[in-house]
Each structure stands twice: as C-alpha cells, then as structure tokens.
View 1: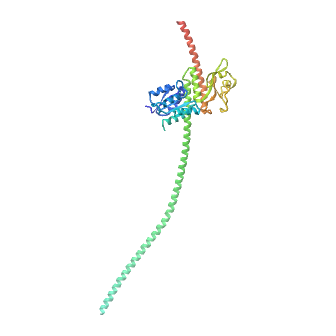
View 2: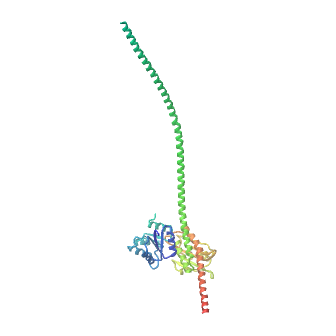
Length: 125
Length: 272
C-alpha cells in the first residue's frame, strides 16, 4: 500500500519518465501517468490522488483546462496541482495560479525543484 | 581557760591548715589547667601552621587542574569547530552528489529513451523532447548529412520552419565546419547572440565514434534559461553519441524493413 498517489499528466514520455524518476525519491510514492488532460480526468475518476503534476501544452485537453476542471469539481478540488511547462512568462504563471494551480515550475526540468515542491505539497518534512 | 585558748588555737591552726591545703590543691589545679591550656595552645599553633601550609599546595594543585581543564575545554572547542567544518563540507558534498545523481538520472533517461525505439521519426521526436525538456532550447534544428551530395539538410525543427533552415555544404560556415571537424561550437555570449540560421548559438556534431552523420543547431533558448549549466555540456556529449547512434540504427532498420517488404513482395509475387 503506497502512502502517496501522484498523477503525472504529460504528453511527452521522456518528460513523464523524468518527473517520475525525480518523484520516486519520495518513499512510498505511487505514480500514475496520463497522456493528456482527458486521460488525466479518466484516471482521476478511478482512484484517489494526493498530488497532480501537469504540463500545459498537450493535445486533446491542455493543462490549464485540466486545472480549471479539477478546481471546479467538489471531489477533486482539494488535490494540490503543480504545473510544469516551457512557458516562462510571468503572465502564464499568474494565469495558471489564478486558475487554481498550487505551484508553477518551468522547464528545463530540475529534479530537485520538483522534489522540493512535491514534498511541500504532500507535507513531507 | 588556758585549755580553751589552746583548743581554740589548735582549732584555728587546723582550719588554717585546711585552708592552706585547699589553697595548695587549688594552686595545683591551676598549674595543671595552665599546663593543659599551654599544650592546647601549642596544638592550635601547630594546626594553624599546618592549616596555612595546606591551602597553598592545594591552591597550586587546583590551579593546575583549572589550567588542565581550560586546555581540555579549548581542545574540545577546537574539535567541535573542526567537526562543524567537516559537517559543512559533508553537507556541501551531499548537495554535489545529489546534483550529480540527478544529472546521471537525467542522462540515463535520455539515453534510455533514445534507444527505446527503432522508428526514425520517433527517434527525432525523442531528441526534440530531450533538447526542450532537459536542455531548455526553444528554437533548434536537426540536420543530417547526405554523404552522396556532402550536404547537410534539416530533418526536424522546433520553433522554426524547416524551410527556413538552409542546406549547408560540408565544411562551409559554422554548421558545415562542425560537421567536418566533429568539434562542437558555442557562441561566445549567449545573451548577445542574434539568430542567424547559418551561425547557430550552439552547434553539436552527431557522430558515431569519429564519423559525423549530422549536427544539432540551437538558435534560441527558453526565456527562463539564461545560460548553459554544466550538465548541458554532458547532455550535448550524450546527444553527440547516443542520438547519432539512435538515428543511424533507426534509419538502417527502416531501410532494411523497406527492403524486406520489397523482397517479401517479390516472393509473394513469385509464389502466388
């Protein structure tokens, strides 16, 4: 039985693997991967998650739409969301945070940053 | 009358004698007491002398003990300082190892992904993902060398149109020079760099051993990426080798698959 269920929503398999590799440093973490926003919502409906990490630019449903849908659903709105994206502009960050994202990480990927943010949101000392 | 007087004198004599004896005894007692007190005084004087001498030696001993303890305290403080410095070194080393570990993990994933497929387009897609997600480039092109014409042509681009990337002759300009020499090119100042398709900010040869099969040309970094990190150079080295092998293998595989399918077509034609 895992202590934390984490959902990674990202269309790039390389990126998913990089994020998963960073998160596996946390003891007791179980990772579920989704290809895009729709796949992410499907996975959300089937089990409980403690944290969502999502990209913004994805086919079918992008990350911002996913953030908005999760925040407006009473069943999921308490789940912390981290946006990981190439979009480094301040307005993109503000938009994501305004929609309800808890944190915003820009690429290139930095495993320590992901780990620190995830630990913080999962309340791991 | 005379007898009475004699008795009286005798009685008085007796009384006097008694008083005299008592006086003698009292004197004896006083002398004894005097002797005892003198002895006591001598004892006290002796004790006082010993008492004065003892603290002086004890004080010396105590002073020495204090000095020893002070020395020990200083040694302990020095040791604590040394241990703290060692701890700081360990903490710094831990961070370095953690970074190294992360970099190795990234390099491992990148190489694992590059060799996870034999599909040419997929290999190009994976190289693109690595360049965006791990290096942080926004505009770049992958150019492959046509050994028949000795020309380099873009096969994949990101952030720019493929048609914008010029066809470059081997040995010509920065791109052609990198392809010919096999040596990477980095612009002197990333901040001052202005996009020029013939002179990329970074140009990395894609080579199998010393055989160059193409180049990776980077024209722009993501806005949040201000400069190259140490790991980027390792990634470039990795891309130079693994990406080239992955491209070469996937092309070879695609060609053999195509040939196999042609041969299979012939066989089917002959046997059916």
